[in-house]
Length: 231
Image (spheres, rainbow, N blue to C red):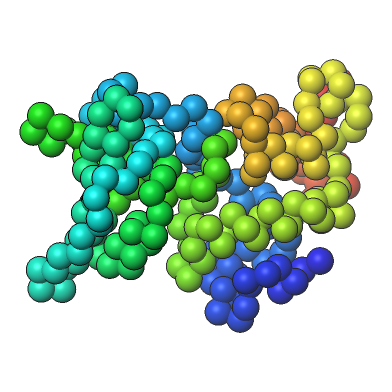
């Protein structure tokens, strides 16, 4: 499988990936999330504190409204759960009005702000599923959701694209996950703990490669088939 086999990756997006240093499935799978959004445990309006990034399950109250001020547009809407209500607004996303008015229940993720005696969110994301969502570094012409979808497809070929590099004795000795399992946990973790376990495996791998490079330089040997491993 190649990058061009992934759904949604045409010429323009392929060039954008190449410009970002992603030229193969391995490159894509080894471009790890820069952070995660934890949507596994939604909170309530009452519990959400200003300054926190929170996930809320809310019902729409009234219709979303669109206003324009020159080139700036703003969509505003009120939401509520059983503990209270908040206002939310989206700047320069006029299509959000129709999207919001087409439904009644939404999952919002974003930073809670104080608004007088109430609370509000600015440009929150609308999420579809509970869980831990990976967030990748921004790549021009490659939307975040498309990047996530491309990685999900690439994971199906992970064992072929990214064969195991660590001896089984090291995996057992240090309690590390095999490469394919760690890749899936890094990109589709069931919990933040799983993501941390995956990061531990690849940090260990990076340490070995660094040790190998240092040993080659110290011994005065050129690049060769040598990998330094703990005894």
